Length: 484
Image 1 (cartoon, rainbow, N blue to C red):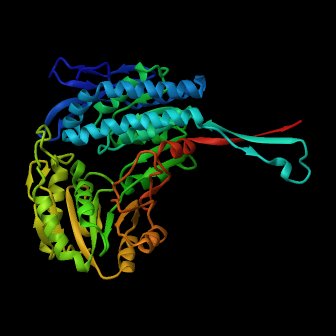
Image 2 (image 1 turned 90 degrees about the horizontal axis):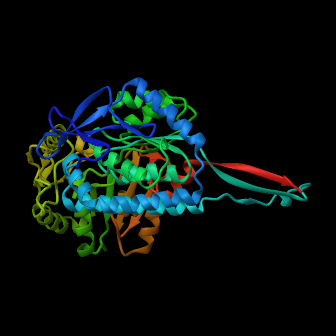
Image 3 (image 1 turned 180 degrees about the vertical axis):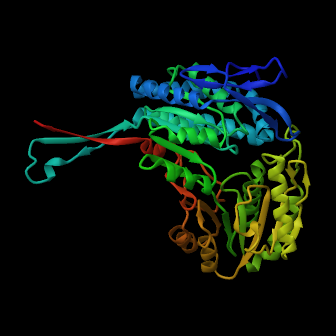
């Protein structure tokens, strides 16, 4: 697991995730342990920069951007080569993801595969990014005048990324930014720094010029230093609504892309094919230990199906293997920290004390929360009104389709919703009325494909990921006219 960006420290023989500044890997001013999420013991250390190093990094990135002479073809070729290098290191990445993210093999391998796909999608967008012809002669007095637009990069993009998809979410920010011709400063989560180091190594080995990608590990203090830097032109952030709102207030007129909090719902109508729907619901609720922004937290069930669905779901949840992600059979591994597991467990306890029925699971072993299924959860409890980010699914009945739509829209969030129905009228009504960024018919809210536009509304943020869409947010139109 020792790489250029991760050298062993002589003191404890732990790999160190170093800083990439001005094209060179270097040590920071201090370091912090990165824990194995299942065993809760140090697996590596992350080097943390000083404020001075952050300033040097930004200046170097801005200089690299101004000197960047890569053509769209060359940018695409670099991303394609980097995708192949990531795939060649899949076994290493799966092991790193097991340690720093707590992912079972299935989740980790899926993360690697999707990341490589996002690289290749971004490579294609780099090659075909173009402007538009503007029909100036359709305006009075413009005979002989030609107009067109160019797509121009913005400058330095700062990507502040979360722990729950430490390869693919990072790729969705880094790759479109590079494809558009920007320089990128990546600040990954301190929970999962090594995957970003490996990604950066793959890009450098693929021929990315030094300085166009930097990696700075750190916490909120480092993020604040980056926000204060005026030579950063765009911030791409995935995280909580609270933090996203604070960032937006500080960056002023500079552009942002915000993928924020969610309470994802899924609707089961009375004509839903349960043999199709329920396995999808289980996967969407419990993969990555429920730590996905679109993990189903609330399953709304037509009242005529409630008893049958509760019984079948309880059997499916009870059968989920959970525990050590090193075990090939494990489906639900640990959440990101023991503190997070304690919080999730406490929310379950509070819900039960307030009248909820615990149908299955809900215990805790260290940082592993036993997959839980609850019914009759009060909206006044944390589990009923906040994002749980753990392996917990709640079910609730509805009596009319309008009631289900209203319940989804009543939350402050709006990322994605799934609906299972055979009724085209219900499907189209959901598509029109749900106040969310994505409506997935006969799929779950977590059924993202990486070429989709992906993002939210309301307190779930704004802007869209998906390489075709993100590359346009990370570039701007320049109008050009010629009078012949």
